[in-house]
Image 1: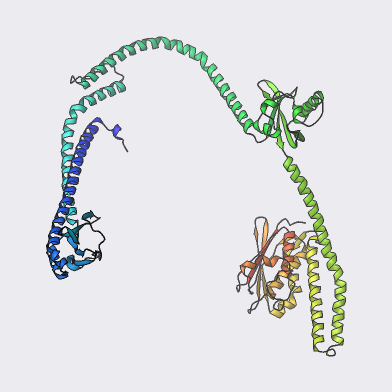
Image 2 (image 1 turned 180 degrees about the horizontal axis):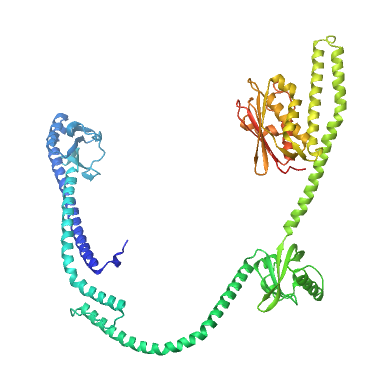
Length: 634
């Protein structure tokens, strides 16, 4: 958008003339319209007051003799007033006495049934004028008159005024444009001529061109001043040209001598300044504490903010001191300087772990990496100190925690194995003698005794299965075999043979892909397949069990899937089924110890993989597990 200040003089003159005309007309029209509105409103109020006075005078007798019919008759002449829409006569107590409504059916307008106002007044609302007038008889108020009139006539007049104003504005704009377009030439033509002259001089570099003076007003004075300025410029240009010709020879000779020198100096200065700025910025903003010390004496020459924070001393306290102030060693200055120089020369760019001491005598562990640099023609040692106190403490805590965890895990695994193993013998004896007792004394000790013996035998059998599963669970991490190349297809075939009776009894259909050869513990992989397939058979639906075993390779791992068409698992139990002893069904519905999938999880994790399930109730379950191509935790 072009701003007004950037318009040409011609356009500015025309627009200013039009703007003044429009502003003057708008101001006049607005004043006229406001005056008409005020006058019209006053006229409406006077007219309604006259109506009210007439109605009040004619309704005095009706109010005195309580004759509503006569009162309503006094209101009927209002029908000749199209703008009166409601009117009413009220008693002295404010109750309505007689009413009038235009056409008796005006939506949204209702005559008040009672009147609280007891004074003469009026008010203009959004679309109506409402007037209240007292009815007086012998200087005493005997009632009130209410009249409501619409403002449609005023709006019609305002619309006409608006049309007239718009028409006048358009006509005025047209006249202002025509007049200003002709008159502006008297002002703009001399100025435009002066501008054209200036452009010619600028483009042609011809200082003999002069502006024509056409009048003796301010523009004529401007043209004369312009011509005088061009005269001075022409004289000065001639003098400068003469001097320039003499200087050019000298400049060319001197320039040849200086060009090379200046170029080299600039390159050197820029490189040096950039180097110093970068070094200072990196030096000050580094998170590591950096000290700069004299390579021969060990005196601290400079340090950054991180260094003051590390030692707890200000730069003023550190600069000028010996490096010995940073360390807790009690060596003499000479001994420390010798050690310092040895580290600076023989261990340059190597990381050294040592300790520093703060102002409040706190000892901190740090890593130091020192290097020799050239600073202003002086060899100095720059040492970067990194506080590793928290890391040292964390390492010690982690080391202790790992040792404790390893010891605790070993003890727990050993305890689980020993406890499970030692329980086998007495449990076998309980189971054997319980079965013998059941066979020998069946039907001899009574029905209750037979039932109790059955409970003992069943409990002992379940305890044996539980202990066996616990032994398998504890042996996953402690009795596993080293990983060897294992043919998963062969292992799956062996698992199907072991599960043959269950597969035949349930008429299960097993479909599988060709499985890969991976580094694994073949015994545990066999256990993994057996547990997953037996679970798929156990938790079958009413349909014939169909189990699909598939696999696919993704980057550095193989993803195996065991999918069935069984009863499925609700989403809130997808994680719970892999937790030891967590059962989703009663033992009477589906027998088992609740350890099978926990064993699967430990086997997969030992091989460095993950196991998860996708399932919905009634839509079967699909259990996924991964085995890395390079094997797991061998």
